[in-house]
Length: 229
Image (cartoon, rainbow, N blue to C red; front, side, top):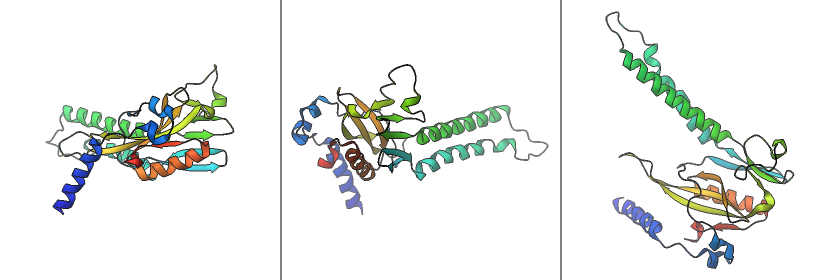
């Protein structure tokens, strides 16, 4: 068991230190050499937060997984524990210190706020729609956006997407007993060589499968150095 664990650690170190293949040679496209291959967005998660759903022939969405929703709910429900001292019966001679009430209130609000933030983030729609001709994040479709050209990070014309890109980032979760992990990004590579992050989570196999479906839908190449390692 110890030898197997040691080999796994050595394999991870070797993979992290392995030289990156030449994207131009690998994909046969000079544009691949003009694109940044570092993280498009720092951080990530060690579990799957999104799954691809093909609504119909013209629309694909990335919806939150059950695990992502449960994770956010755990934080929201966990905030209730911080408020328990307010409701626990106490002997007449005992008195809960004021600083304790303040600490419990702040801790509860922090957990509740984090849970609400994650719930909103995980449930924000991510949509590719051929009828609208756009990719966008959020509930407001491009035809409802006023004032000219929409924000390029939030709304991207489908004909501006040159390829899809998969990269990974080694994330350090912090803390003495915490576990570090890889998180995997799926990015859009645009014709101007800029990138837009679509999803970022810890399950490479699922992300790769979703990326292949999306690449077929958009009729663009998929650039993935991880699968070539």
